Length: 309
Length: 258
Image 1: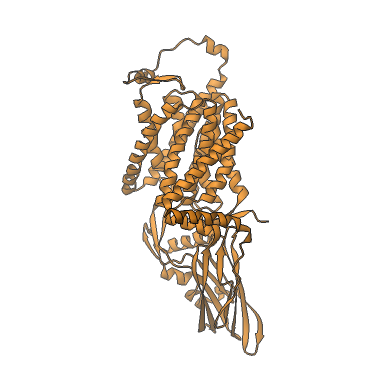
Image 2 (image 1 turned 180 degrees about the vertical axis):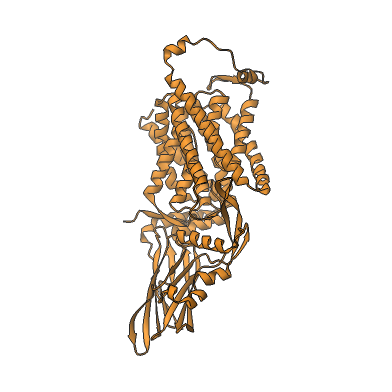
């Protein structure tokens, strides 16, 4: 018996178990780290014969399911800061709109791809390395050393964020800061996400950890909450503008990813913040190396279809 | 409008129920003495590509070339190039005149018949194809080669010399037979099949047939819903995703996950 199914919008037939498996793996990562997983899913779907534009659009649809499932799981664990998530989301929407205009300017100037790809590789490299080193150092520190550590003077950044107006308390995250900061940072991530064509989870998570000083477990849940709304918007826009959302493909992926997301969320609860950060940093660095390899190894075919992440 | 949408979704569910009953069209058509079977390819839920058998009667001693062409659309592609030592898209290329699908089958080895190779196959196709946009300095010849490579990788272009077989003779005629497997990613549409009969390099006659590839059942319904009711389709996709996400979350909770 054949387990292949024809995907009407993708215009190809794919094995059901491959799609369920891909969904499961990416959903697991999503639940574990609070990232959408588009960076991973789109190239994998292209490898099994899905056109890039359909892969990217249908992936957004499955991320809606995975992030609903994972946000719900994190919400039950008390890991979602809705107040912070909303501010980041508002900033993200403004940033995304601005980013779409900016990409048009970049394209008209030529070499936009060069700027985008090199920025992406450099940023992944810097973020991944910093996170990896920082988490490794934290893990090495013993409790005794921590206790002995003398209180240090607040850093310039800490003083700067304290000086911002309208200081507000975010009890779930355990921080007090101005709403201006998450709005600006959300907008920055929105701009970057629009330019790079990815959901932005990889950029948002380190920003929440290092710039908003949120605890890692709350970061994962809050990031997923934000990704959920971003992907709802993308799915509807892609369906209306480009007719590229394949419901059958998305349903098969989301059946796998929603289950995977639950296991990911449970594991994230069992791991320490630094352990989570170090695993995420490793994944970020692997993605960076993969992108760098794609940029340096000559492609098999010198023409490619437009679209995709 | 609401009733029409409700009907469409009722048909979607019906399509799912009838999935197992989907059967391919197996009619055979003959134009003059060119026979193509099946005449229509139905893309249903379990479609994984399908073979198409071709047969014809040709004069004894004659050879044949068979072309299958899809409709030519404007294609927008990205040309890859090296900038600062890194490979990336260096410009957009618009392709005109290249068929969506192209297969060539022949009785002869085209390498040893350059006169045939110049009139059929990729050489002939190159003359009909135009490129606009980011053309490399070397000209569009390289682009055409890359276009063929891209399409061959997808299984949508192919040249198969000696794949048409002469199986029998009666009186002064030979029976020509061949089989071509259409891949699972074949786009729906009409495909023109042209059989050219040759003798000593001279064209004796041409016979043609139009093969239809169409989506039916659930794939057909979903494709029409996606194109004709795009906003509703998008919203339904989101609702399915959110409901599935919640249901899975709830199931895990009820199993004592947390």
